[in-house]
Figure 1 (cartoon, rainbow, N blue to C red):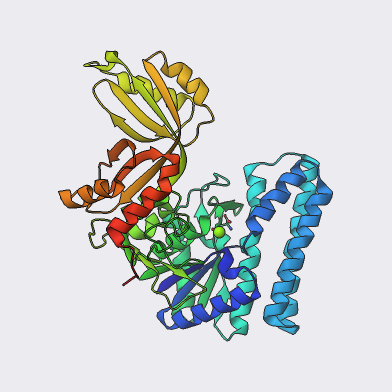
Figure 2 (cartoon, protein in one colour):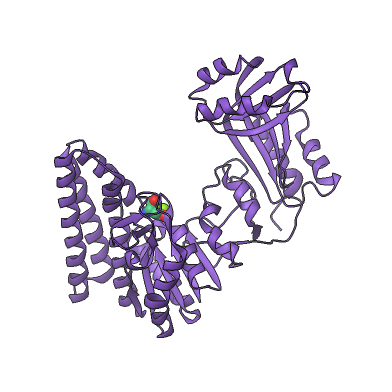
Length: 454
Ligand code: ASP
Ligand code: MG
């Protein structure tokens, strides 16, 4: 049995949904559970209209609601034609849109957007997309059946960032999902949404939560695999906008994928697939526009290669604190990091010597206040216009060769700071901002070659 998750672009319009149906069909004999996102852009639109309504701009909010009605109707008709099934689905979608309009009116009256009412509204994307997908799959001849995610994805009541309750979800899957699969049916659920335990009030798992849904359902039914269908071929050895000949990574370890995510590899956030990976369920990232591709397989254990990918990040600020007082004293680092905590700024890369600390932050919004406080500890220097390049790989530190090659490849690129992660899978270097791109290109060439992909 496998769980197939389709992101917003894979269900963005009638053509994409039809393609998705063909992918589901090709997997049907394995026993499939399907999880879908909202149509691309719909969750953003819903959140936008909720904010508008709460500010009292009801006309604008209703206009957005009607835009959503038109888009969903149009795609439904394009998929199903004008017969009875189409009319039924359109009527259901239309009833949902009416409910959405009422919610917007209520919000405009209340003038206050709570996380709970935001969830009530932002859940509509998946509620509608899952209905439309079921109808489309049935129209394509698949034995698809809609399952209300609010009956299965049981969570706590932390609205907008709800915590899934694994035991309850497993029970609900056993009662409502698995019997369908056993009967040869294909259950289809909306991702991202659930309901608070014992209340049936709608919750959501946070933005991008559909991957998390798929992973939780996969874990609950102990699936053989989870397939995350998106609009890229998988994870690549570098950002292709920086390194045009970046290659597909066929298999990657979960912790390496996590390191890459912290550099903004937006394919998927590994935390969201942790529940499945922990159980040893492989997760594949696949391209619904090119379903014949192999994609990237993310597993707990992957073949140990020295280097899996090169990552980079711009607009980093580096801060250096030097203090002779640090020598042979305790508590200096605690005092230093407390300042960052107090100003709610997360520290990224750190290197220390006996009398100095260098570190980087992504978010420099509170820099002035931070530097003011740091001055009490020692001399402070701020260097803006820095960037980070990182070499990520399970065996980067296992011998001298990979490390030497990385440093050698950088040539005359000036390195301001260098850090090897405790797990030994990430060699991070702080360089001048404008050197991030050439440094990534050189590192990529050193580890993956420049020639044709073999
Ligand atoms: N539709 C939701 C969002 O855009 C969930 C998802 O797509 O994963 O955040
Ligand atoms: Mg999405």
